Length: 309
Length: 271
Image (cartoon, rainbow over all chains, first blue to last red; front, top):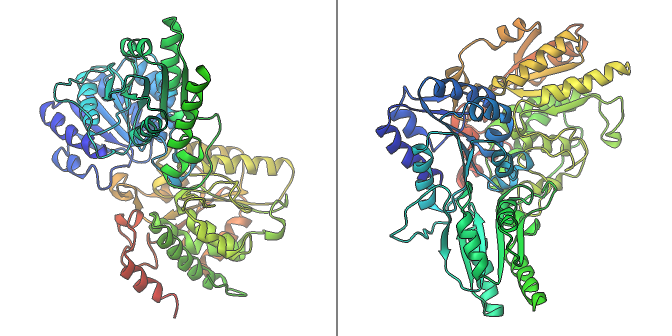
């Protein structure tokens, strides 16, 4: 998805001379082309995230559209107050790009896991929170946040290598996409976790015969309330899945939509418990160990559905 | 992984590098450049300078060490194993599934790891806090904090630098691994300037030495220990030192040696 993002940025920077790109010393084997093609609009600020966000605010106050880029944990948490006060409070045209969201930095350890970003970014007024799941969404989400004139956070992960979009789809911030149809159950997800979601659906279908729709809610804020309510009305159960803590992420957002709409449905969110995942291993290993492996999720969903009968 | 008995500090520097090469090769992971860059500094610290006892690793009188540039973690793990904090065999559990050691230090992973790090710019403030607590207890222990030269771009480093000078905390000793490289370029290209002058400007005494000359490192680090004012050590190093294919290059931070390259590199350590 990082490459999809970079490709789109090259196009956007060509079209819009007001765009300035700032990186917090990240970009090896990724940003070289942007640096080369736009040397006067590309700056490596150095290892200084707070400074980078402040500079972005200054540039945006002076008429620029600014892209800021670093590892997701650092660009959201290290400079949170600068994002809140300098960017959101002033409602500036600054985009925060976090790479390696979730467990993508896996065995780099807890400091590099980004599993609180959706919650803390969603909590900020004016901030849009976008978390693509695959290439098409990454490109379209990049286009959409650039077209928008306010603050946005884009969380990038790894592409599953499969594109799920239909030819007639048009991307819109705040809209969800049904990437797999299914009439019985609905699983909402955000970010690069389609691999686990499709496995879950397959296990459930094999074991129970129930078909599960998979819906990508790329945009966590604003969220597609209409689609959530619509799916809840026709599904025997609503589930959410994210590589993020259970507090304040997609699960919280979906359950809030359901409860505010007064919809009673079987519901469970799958994400990370309220503890640090200190184990060492790959992303897939960490997901399993943290309880969001496909078999664990499928079994829990089956139990919920069975208990309901 | 064989153990060398009664290893000298110089020998330890070489052995740490050999272990780092083996660990990164086995796990097929990055950050080799930084780990090799700090290996001799860790050898000087753990095999001469630090007052520590692996058998009593929580002794209140021990010197503390914080690896603020956490991405050099493999060198720290190798050093602690070589110094007897845990068996060398444990190093096989570096950055693999069900492993013990992350790519950045976790304080719960093993005895001897004082602080979890991985996001740059945290170590000196934590070190200052520990030094403040030691001062209040009249504890003569020292706190050595290893930072990167690129890491000095984080504002928090200078907030801590001011605090240490204002509070006369000469027991916290920052060591800067000046290898001249950071994640996406050369440090002098991104922020040209004189690091020593910057530290002096904040009121620090600056000592410099060759970061691969273990004898010189021991002398300088001990001089810093005895100093009566806040003292920082600038150790001039080479990213990827001891792996000629990646020495002093940006890619040293990311590059994973291919099988034949690794075999060739490790040979020179096995003579």
